[in-house]
Image (tube, rainbow, N blue to C red; front, side, top):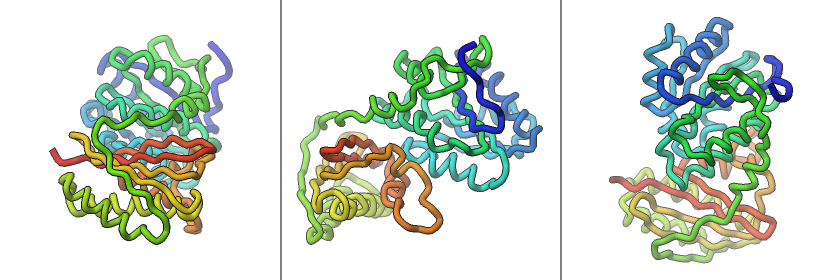
Length: 312
């Protein structure tokens, strides 16, 4: 065994490695049952097929909160504020127990970097909180990169050999590695520069492109809000202006905002804003409204790429 396992009064973040669904259920049912026996509120957030397996195997399913991670965590940037932190905050003064499976076979290549960063950021976001979060990983189906990243983002590992500290734990390295330039689009791109006087024009342009891409009226409104939040932040904190690029792929309408600002805190937009309502809301709202948000930020400037799924 390597290192020292955390005491149970500290935040615990574990990676559970399973090779088939029987092993998945065998690993999770005692974890859930142990939480209920200890009087801890329990949340299980997994993609639907796995969620149903665990639901049917748990002795007291009505005592557990269940969430389809493919919906609640479709954008990995939503998971900390709107799934995990929301559950913890609903139970002040109590230790909580959570199963969260944000990375599964079938996650797209575009989504994966945000997933890996999410797993790394959990450690800082919940330091000092009374919570245990167990993250299952399909050791037979996921590729070597995903498994290596899981070793780097989870201080505690659980598998058929038992429970031990991870010798490869280095979450900051994962955050930095996936803070990389975003891949160039394959589709034609429309470009619009903006400043404070052209923000209304920018909103109209985004609405027209979203409508052409087939987004429903409520999704058009969501995208307008998200782009406006980012563009207004450019005006206030990113040098007073920015550039919007828009393109359409078969799956998404994509809007990318670039400005001269720098998001120096990797957790920006990944935590529920303070209850005093002062600052910190813009990017977390963007994460809530969009299906995927990718960020590349350096002292020289920041690009935020928003994906909205097109109807099939």
